[in-house]
Length: 281
Image (cartoon, rainbow, N blue to C red; front, top):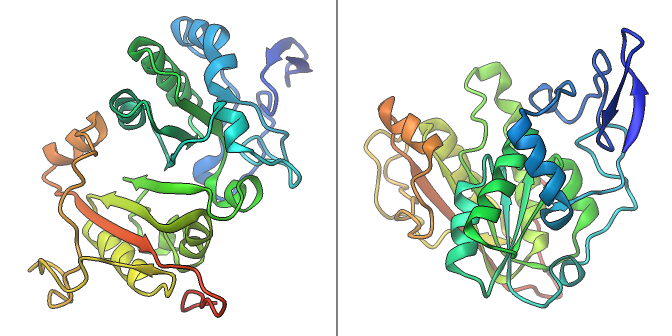
């Protein structure tokens, strides 16, 4: 714990990597910028009591959601065993990942999240469920993943309901892109699966096109189940709902608003000596 003066000159205790009021460190996009604020008392108690079990405290880079360029995770050391690992990018309050960890104690689960109250709620859910096979890291996935993890170390990656950046001028900020697909492909074992879901139609079509445009991934549902609302319905390409994906409170809000979730799957193709890259390489 470190003490830093606030802009008013008073002092408060901050977690490593946090910025005081008035001190804002920019991460990849504005969506990951936050001011340091105290957690509600119940979540602060959870943080104080359980962060040493569930939270990975990295060496930080320039900002509080970045990691230092020399920070690396050995997943066997993190979890204390060798087991298949699933990464969830954007775990929210932990509903999905904690539910999966409880149902599959033989697997390990790593969460990347930038919303501190959500991290605290994830830890609270993990404690209530009695699971110990979950770890969470406060980090921007786009910056952290090329730094912290080795090639072919993950069996699955989940990207469920990422920020849709609905305005056209902001869509370049969307996480799922050709470049990000290359990084996920690097991390997945051969035959590993990238599971995605969104309830914004145009983002679903973009996700599908990213998967199908990457030479390192295969969409096993390519051409199936055409969606009449799709501007290219003849292509299809959406997967049945992943039976391991629970209906979270976040998805329920979309359902109440009349949106329908689309699932997309990318399967890591076998590595070879002449391995190709995604189409924008």
